Amino acid sequence: MAVRVQRGDFDVGAELAALSDGRSDIGAVTSFVGLVREMGGPGRGAMTLEHYPGMTEKELEAVEREANARWNLSATLIVHRYGRLEPGDRIVLCAAASPHREAAFAACHFLIDWLKTKAPFWKLEETPDGERWVEAKAEDDAAAAKWTTR
Amino acid sequence: MKVLWFAWLRTRVGTGAEDVDPPSSVDTVAKLLDWLAARSPGHAEALAKREVVRVAVNQSYVPLDHPVKPGDEIAIFPPVTGG
Image (cartoon, rainbow over all chains, first blue to last red; front, side, top):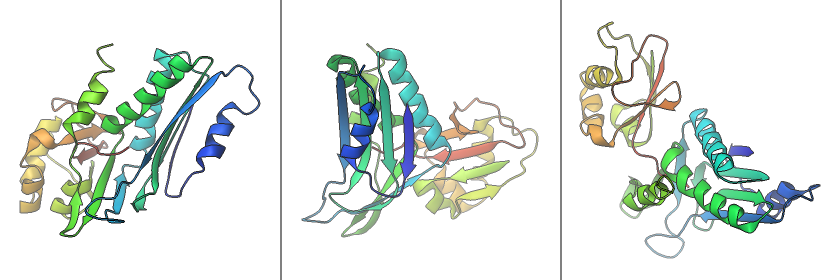
């Protein structure tokens, strides 16, 4: 289990390789990469991610612990960036390693769904009309809630 | 106790952190929010819609009836939008 909150970018290939390096008990590694999507025209829609240092790490670790309690996982990783990001930039990486693909797929999906509603990050978007705080989406709550009813 | 404000609550209040010393009768999160709302027009505006306010005490989410005491770190923020 590992959690990192950082300003800088991450190397997806290197992060995924490190999850299974030196191990022969892992049969599957799955990953989710979240990117800044352009909004309001080509190349527009930069944003600044604010977070609550300390609580952010605690909440991400709790999400990882929950995933490891639910599935048989060999390793998990969450890397989340903060600060100003532009369209096309990576925001977040979630990865899960397991002996078998079913657990790895499900756990990775769970990691991103839960962190979106629990980790204390807030997005401030740059729009043609000025800066705007992104509002939480009901779809994200619903996506997280489906994991509580299983 | 230390109060931290994040995202648009911070911009309404005008500061990200403040040290406050409420009377001892302010012993729950709900009472603290009422007390803070009376501090300035910005505080009142930030706390006008309680249903969109989330609170963490000592970096853990808590409900409105959770106790607060001197020395606590109270964070007040809108629903999160990471990922």
